[in-house]
Length: 290
Image (cartoon, rainbow, N blue to C red; front, side, top):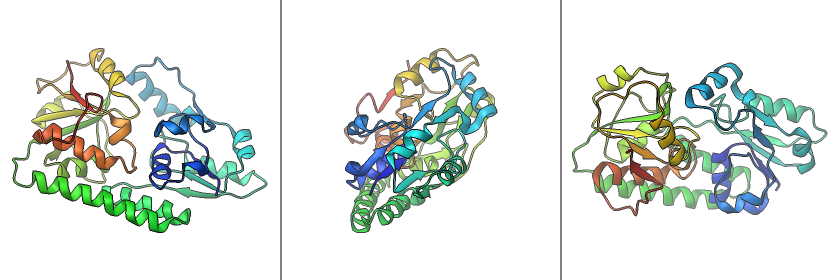
């Protein structure tokens, strides 16, 4: 089967299921595992690379998923049997509506599968969904069972520990709390999430609202930003930062922004950040802001 992934999380899932050899196309943001570097890229960003968080937010508000260019000629040439996309966030990837409109114009008719999880159980369920679509249901069942086992182990290790109040921020300007599955990640890691509930699609908040939530720990995990970019954005922020504990900078794209199997590693990362448990955390996964 020829697979085209228009969602980084979907590419993660294809890798988890051992089907990277069937991946014929990907987005410019699909950067894991490293082997995908040789796979043709069918999307591009329509934004300059040096925009600030505020400028990106403004552009996304006005353009939505139009900030992504889709190479329909290359998509046609790749002749996929299955296209994996999403309709959860207008600015996270090419939208399901746009993809289906493109597919209707093709001579062939690939199946379009939209992945739209909002909670952690739904994230894991997408692995099964993709596995079934690929005829790899048994592999998916085994992989999901392993991921559940890892979550159970984290839950066991944090069970009797005090639960700090945790604020997770997925965008810096404006300040935007991390919702959807992130509150569940925090809870499983032994924290008490503030500012967002499981499955919630959040809205921007003020620095005063962040301070009023009185978190013990603040996590910075901007959508699409590697830790180095997050540190740069935090340093050049315009709005004054509330009088709060020094925040942790996390690898948002790897473990928190994308609804794929690596959210489980995100829970392990949080368990070490919140409670000092040893999950072999590296500085690139989490470190304190200067």
